[in-house]
Image (tube, rainbow, N blue to C red):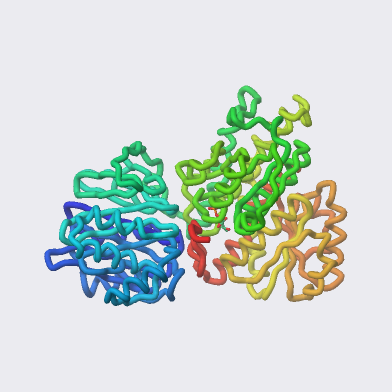
Length: 605
Ligand code: F6R
């Protein structure tokens, strides 16, 4: 979603704002802009499309000034045009915004009746006018900002510059904002990655907080306007983490980083030396009668894989629902339910709202998150970390396998705690978990083969992914990965469902990706594969050597994964579906890291 950067510095900031905005490109955007303060007043440059368009504007019309804000906009209200791009100006203030102002229509009508003229279709512009009106009424910048904040309903992260007083201000309500404490320079950013090049010392604003930043000082206030202190933390996101290195795309780099990300995540739960699995003390699987997982997109599919694993290895029922639906269904909740949000960013609006709702129902809540300072991490009773590191590619890869790793470790912990797994079975399961990084390295080594097979998907109008059990959930994830980055229509199905409708789509032009490791349901899945083959469907089968051998003569192409225990097969098979999607999209020339219309962290409902 929208990216925010603000700098109150001792040198010209335009170039730094542009560099910082480039680091925020991964969040997804469709226009960009900056504003600065000079002796002549506010300066603004904006452009629709990529940041390179904004750079071209700046080459013709540079933007001096040592106080400035920058923004990448993911359109919600109004098309991604230059006029709707942020910053928005009113009198002496310029402002950028992430989120949605829900009462902007009422505010706009009120402001128009007082003679204010709007130039954009956005919900954001009302905030600039509210602040400017309060300045007109004689309030100080801080009073004007605080007063305007009190009029807003909705979610927002804001950065505002005040031309006359040379101040940078920010506010957080549901949409994260980080204050960076630099050397003779204060920074505001929508995430730590944006702030990292300037300083590693940061303070995270809490919901309701707002801040006033001069060149040398940062003051934070709560919603009531009372000064508050927030802890200063050192961010781990070094500047180098946001580089592609020798890879063509961040997505490719992140696929290759998975063995490490998995290993880091597993070590947060598994003590290999002691043969132990540790979960936070507050998480007592014996007291849990059911888990309710809430998540969106890829994180949802990680939960769906875990549902099968919890049932099989811990006899623990798991319900899972997409967060955007869950909350409006007012689902009946039973005591003993652990509600678990799964989210890479920890900021996804629907998941966060569902988590909050579960809390109001008196349920114990857990958040499985990659961003450990995120809203969900702070909201939940229990934080379950993943250690994927910053994920820059919009399509989730290493965050997904990190989620699956943590979930698989929790499954084993639950199985042991509930007496479903004996000590010997627990030790065996731990050994399987510890094999995952090595097996993923082996799976990733098949990249060249995957690239060759990707050619077979290039001209497809539609691709079906099938699997059974946990592999069905992985089929959904495989289809999501392909459609989001290559724009080829793809759907995942439980293999047994094919003949209840989707098989009507099968002909010689519809490739079918079958996830069929040689497990206990192999024969069943293979029957479904044969049904497809009988209708001239082209089958790309992802399986181990034994499975591929058994399918010889029936399938069109095979992608080998190492043989593994069913506990870890979903993890071992994941890189293959990711690489298939990646190379298909790349060969089609798609913008792999920033697919059209998509945002990284979806902070609006
Ligand atoms: C797809 C993808 C999305 C996210 C979803 C949830 O590749 O990345 O489907 O998984 O938007 O995001 P988080 O995990 O941040 O809550």
